Length: 169
Image (cartoon, rainbow, N blue to C red):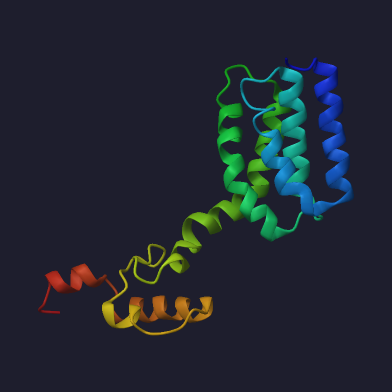
């Protein structure tokens, strides 16, 4: 049986107080409240959730590493809240504030980290594939991997496939 709205808000406020006391619990609390405050929730819960997410990702107590891990999981809920026709302006304001706070983390996830995920795959942020002689080199340091990506970019400025299809150059 579902809790009454005042009881749900009381429990959500208790969760807020818990994370204010121990910032290490932010990821668990954020992932736990997303289904409760999503697009199908009542307006009061959506308002509380949007405000909480805006506060969470603007908080200096929530470390950047934890924010980066949590940011991707929040995107679906933010998108759903934005797509509600005639949504409450307070909810929209907080969703936009949250999106602005997580923009750099999402950018890093989409465009920077793929360079470091696997040395056998393409380096999409540099627009090149990793040649075989480079992927066989040893080294697991991220700086080393990035230098390999730059080395690949300098060796094959238009990419391996272009180089193979244009042997004249």
